[in-house]
Every structure is written in structure tokens, then in C-alpha cells.
Amino acid sequence: MFMELSPMKLVAIAIVAIFVFGPDKLPEFIQNATGVLRKVRAFADSAKEDLRSELGPEFKDFEFEDLHPKTFVRKHMVDGGNLAELEEIRNAFDPRPELEEITAAVHDTADSRAPGTVSLAKDAHATPPTRHAFDPDAT
Image: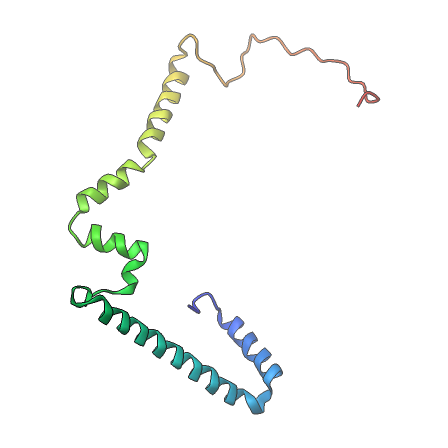
């Protein structure tokens, strides 16, 4: 939760807290905040237990973290022994084979100079483009 907070940011937050609450009331505020966090966690844990008991014995081992999509896929695909299916899905979304085919085709056409292909290299026999007169007052 607080992994994105660097030590410098935590020091800055502490300094701002000292200025806002003062050094006298800061310990009291920290105690109140931790008490509220404990009560919220206890309330969430009791709600989870109530929900598990209401769902019945077939959901006794149910974990709420399993509802996260990554955890759900990991539990049912990887841990379930379906590694071949997972590898097949990965390969289906892998663009590397198509990119290798395109690269090979581009290299082949550049080497073979087949008729009807477009070359991106400058042609030595090409006529220079004609320059049109530019009228600065017209624009």
C-alpha cells in the first residue's frame, strides 16, 4: 500500500504533520489513527467471517483474494496443471512469428528486386522533381 512512498516523502509527511498538529498533539493523533485502523481491520475480518459462515461449508476455504483476476487465472490455470493450455494462449498472442515473417519478406524483396515491388532506396536514373514557384503573398 505504501510501497510508492520513498523515505524522503515520508520525512516530508512527518514534517507537515508536526506543523499541522504540533509536537504536543502528534502522538495522540497517531494513537487515534492506529486505533481507527485496527477497528476497520477488525470490522473487515468479522465481515469476511460472517460471509464465509453464511455461504456454507462448501465455501469454507474461499479466499477473497481469489477474486482478483490475476490470482484467479494463476490458481485455475497454472496451479491446476494446465500449463500446456497457458503456453498455447501465450503463443497465440505472441507477435514475434508474424514480425519475423514480415522481416524475412522485406529482406527477400530487397535482395531479389522482384518486378512490381516498391524500393525505398534512391534510384540513380530518377528525374529530379520539378520545383514549383512559391508565392509568399498567396499564403
